[in-house]
Length: 145
Image (cartoon, rainbow, N blue to C red; front, side):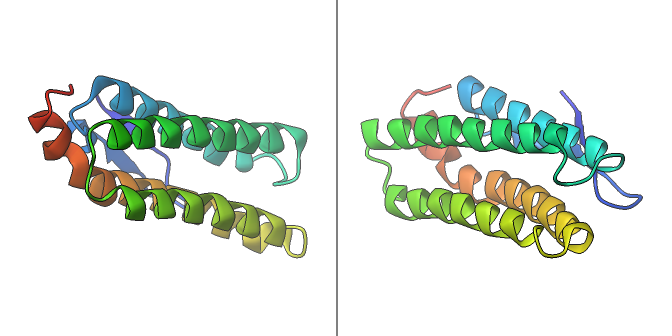
């Protein structure tokens, strides 16, 4: 399954099966998060970063990220994943940084709005392809698919 990640400017990144962590539930959650990110990027082209529609999508992303993080962490705890402490820290850092970057848009909306979109796109792409891939084989070995 391919899903387009709309990049800033003129380029975009293609989501493909290489992003799969081998677990249907987590893959579905990742796809949903990327869909929310796509909506945010597309709508930000025509709306102010502080518009109600943007705030609504950011709120939905934040809420869903929390749900996703809890799902990952529950599986990690259940199966004693050795990297759980660092992974939880990354999740917390994401939540804190996202709030900080969004709050910075209060001072310089246009410049910091682009920073927010770049941050979210880069963080999710890196997190899935690097950090989440670290648990892929571990969960597959435990029989999770």
